Image (tube, rainbow, N blue to C red):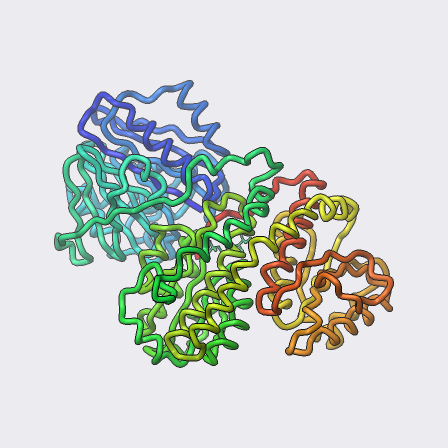
Length: 619
Ligand code: AGP
């Protein structure tokens, strides 16, 4: 999704564009299809844009170098309105050459603004951002001052925006405005940054301040002024942001893809998310908590909101949290949550799960929940992200930077963090004694080694996947805690191998889906532990017999030593023995490896699959 970087400094004889370019490189993980940089030199705007990767932009800048300047703004665009093209790439320059602007978000009343403010004037590309740029330049003619013009503009807009703009006649300042789409200001000595994400400038300054909802900011090289929605200047306090991952982690480390590297990093992702949680008194701590923990004893419902893989981790977590805490846990897709008039109040704990912490659907759902009086808790992998800043409490996943669009290690870390949250709540609410919690934590701590044991079969799973290149459809069946894993296995294959895949609750098969089983159909089945008290093992075995008798090629994910598997199964991948509530963390790994290996065998771009972005920062 779109990334924004702005930079301003005292010295006019420096390459400001280079600092912006470097920041855009750190934002590449958001996914994009065009990029550009603009700067103002002697009341003249210089702009270079390119379609495709930043390397294309760098080549164009080398051909037409920027002059030395004290300020520049840049953007990576993921097309929402209008195709990826130079015309539609940002920064947009107004037709009167007065204003340069970059934008992250969607302006929902852009066509009305085009008619009412611009009188329907002819546009080049017709994107919402082009309309907004022209409208800002139009208002600036009368207002004379860019920040006043920006204030007037944002008060007639609907939708979501993070704007960063410059006035060709005044390169001493950068003007910003935020509504929903995040913006953070990096505070330096005689220089300042503004960006969509702290990671764009954290190498230069860790001292930052978030532009909050409906605030505006005027940034010069010496001063940052922040204004509220009434355009009244307000005081602000900055805070130190740390990026935990080591930047050179973003190398493939000799693996075929970031996704393979990240699958193999899962033991440490789980281990790092667990360790250091328990204080000396044996109490699990959250990373941030802005209210008294006794509040958790009063809640009567937990609502988990997330998207995609993050939502699947919530579905897994529900089993553990309900079992340990005896409190109802509902899991909702964030993009559905706020439109269904949900029952949310001060006794609801809303848990938002997100790897990037920038998913707009999730951010908007959290905003809605807070408006309804709920306390919000983020389970997030990206420190300093919008979700991190937005929620009342935070439990970080320490999976390290996840580059591949297909989430793997963050998924396991999310489930782990949810288990920790469940134990934390069970302790506060008195559902479990300290010794019971200690026992469960000890079981959790055995998982990294069990994950590592499954990874020793990586090559075997990879070879099996390579034989499935002609598969046009793959089904995944699971029951109980295996059902969300079936959903996640299907999503992995869909998103990186572009093969139609579907996850089913195994018990649902006979209510319809079994009709699509025909000879040769590849079906993965997640088999629960034999000694589970949920009593689902025997039912899953009969599900296998139902589909095998209709010619399906069954691949079982089962527990080491399970002798009850029916004959005639095509392939079985075993997992080390573990309690049913923790088995989900192990069962997903062969499915991740299968998807990654099959996509590789099909010569697809595993890390940046078509149509997808690592962080979906628009609704
Ligand atoms: C997962 O492989 C996908 N990339 C996608 O479903 C992702 O999980 C979803 O967009 C949520 O992203 P987040 O965790 O950053 O909020």
